[in-house]
Image (cartoon, rainbow, N blue to C red; front, side, top):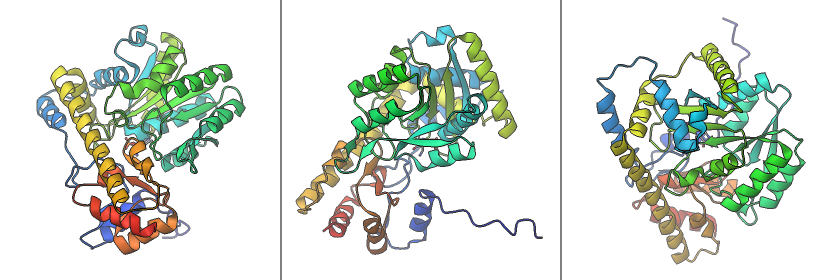
Length: 395
Ligand code: PMP
């Protein structure tokens, strides 16, 4: 009975804790802007039509466990580009992963094993779980500057400085599109400069792509950062998640890929990734991967998916415009332009912890303490209430 007496309660997760507080609140006006998953204009989670159709198609199919082969190929094509030639060269070591989180964790384990002296450079700020993932994989962490809270813009000069001053051959985590939490991405020209500096410094870019499609509404345009790095001949790593862009949060579908110098390396890397996964959880479940590979390989389903992604992104950006307009109408003295300038699912509002506290206590509106609000939780029904609350607490 004394075995676990010394186990303290784990600190609350900064993101999941918000949902707990939201659920406990009984006020009918309550709004959850904490979690970054898509909601429709009624605030409900959405099952995409392409997913429903794919589910009907795969129902009768044999689920052999080998089906991940086409899943990985299809995912890699989606990220690296159909015609990039890399597929023919067989240089990409890709494995199915337990969604984006699992892909990151698998990579972190791989990094510790095969670059044991290395650390990981994370942007400041970043998704809070990145810190926990690399911590638990026992990889030392550094940060690089990314966001300037004064101008609410990319701190490009500081970013370049930190990339330059990192020791040669450092590993960097980059968000290729729809940066979480800031909603700010480098421009294509800036990506070129970053890529060039990475070449000079021989750094390794690891792309965590959890929101492909959510930056521009176009899945291909959202891979421009990868394209720039691939054109420059970098070897890269990439974590892909289908949680957001296919609305599959319950299925945990992701892919980890590592572009190697040649086929021999890719075979070795893949075998090691499989072995690390095998000792942790074996393989991820196949159902979600089958759904994704069906959608990606069937032209009609793929076209429907592309259309539905655009629909989600359009709704979110429409809400940005509406919210911004309402705040201006209320005569807010705060400059809220960043609501419409930022992209992806989040608005990094600049609200301080005391504002976040007041919004929760007085207005039953919940978000993370860094002032990140999920635009996917904003609807035509609650946007007036939200604008008014934001105006009140920032008066
Ligand atoms: N990376 C980033 C930047 C994310 O925001 C998220 C999800 N919040 C993930 C990875 C993990 O996504 P998944 O739900 O697929 O594990």
